[in-house]
Length: 136
Image (cartoon, rainbow, N blue to C red; front, side, top):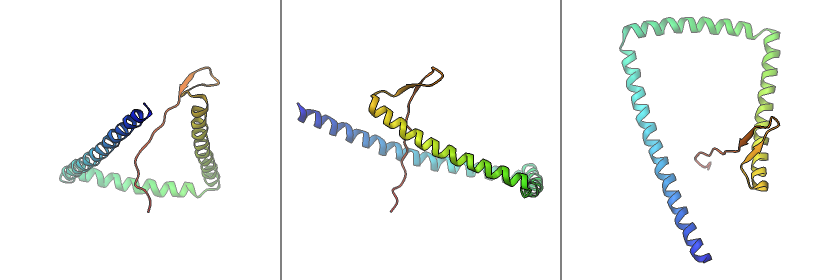
């Protein structure tokens, strides 16, 4: 019986691996297609005089905006505010990583993927996975 179960698990694993590879391949294909269509749209826009003129005007005002922003951001108040924001963003990142670890431990220990929050609302624990190339 255990041998049959191992055989079924092996077949399931092979099937899942095949699905992962086929979906990964399809993602690459669609990404390439999307890139081609984006290039086609950009070519259409670049060949439209009205769009080109509007883009030039927008770029001019974008540069003026950037200059004004730099001028404001060098003030002491802005520097302090930016530092506080960066500190908060760093804390948020650390808390999210810790929460993810705690949730994984909770699922393992409790055997459930649901937890009730302090507000009484039942929440589901979900995971998001993606493929990345392994570093060499």
